[in-house]
Amino acid sequence: MQPNEALLTVDDLCVEYRTPRGPVRAVDHVSFSIAHGEVFGLAGESGSGKSTIAHAIMRILHPPAVITGGHVNFSGDDVLEMDGDELARFRWRDVSMVFQSAMNALNPVMTIGEQICDVIQCHLRLSKADSMDKAAHLLDLVGIERSRLAAYPHQLSGGMRQRAVIAIALALNPPLMIMDEPTTALDVVVQKEILQQISDLKDKMGFSILFITHDMSLMVEFSDRIGIMYAGEIVETADAHDVFNNPQHPYTRGLMSSFPSLVGPKVKLTGIPGSPPDMGKPPSGCRFHPRCDQAMAICSLQRPALREVAPVHRAACHLYELTGVTPRTERGTL
Ligand code: SF4
Image (tube, rainbow, N blue to C red; front, side, top):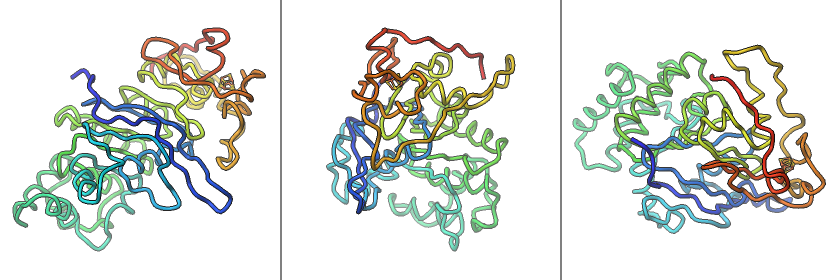
């Protein structure tokens, strides 16, 4: 199905951490949307605000984090205005979440079957036997033997635990799944298997995904569209293919040149000099300017707006305002 209609819209979202040193704005006027059946990826270095956005969408931010502005709209409902009962229905029935560490997400003293049934019985009026049947079916879907319903998390491998977490996320057949670094703790072979399985399930069940990772190769392979985050802001959005072949923002180009291509001639990996800024005192103007090899005088003075640089391709960089186009980097395929 060609994704076209917005299921989730995040508009001008701002999140601050109220620290003793003063407010730290971790998410700064971020906007994006996710269509039905679409995989939208959020990429960027650790601390860029990706997970904070996911937690804000689910309304599971804890103090000192506070949503200070913007809107989150899910299927016509204003998520930031939902009361307790509405949120209880919204979470898991409308949007579920797969966290990075399955061991932390699972209860160590409950069996996998009990944990899946817990979610089912919390939201659906099903008997214990029917819930267990549904749990067994969910294990089938994620490729775990039904006998593992009786297993405790420590009795499963890392890959199986993450599959069990995905089964729990699928329990209510939600239209949107948020996957926050879902395979980061796993080896590359298991990573690939699990992402392929999620992709097959998505095609079969039709849900959308907000996919969060700092791994650009996984991001490009798995996502339809990508938003690149730097220091709390989205600095580039485009189709995954365009981000890979024609990254326009100097930060995205740095990210793309930080991992090797499996095909084509050997090229030296250049990466990005320096480190992400202290968000308590972010750089003036373009927040990337202290690390940017194309920085100009204006870059430390004025914040660039996110603007269209090609069809369905936006970037926040002064180079486009001054010269119209930056040199493009052509890469081979993954
Ligand atoms: Fe680099 Fe300036 Fe563009 Fe920022 S606005 S990415 S510093 S060229």
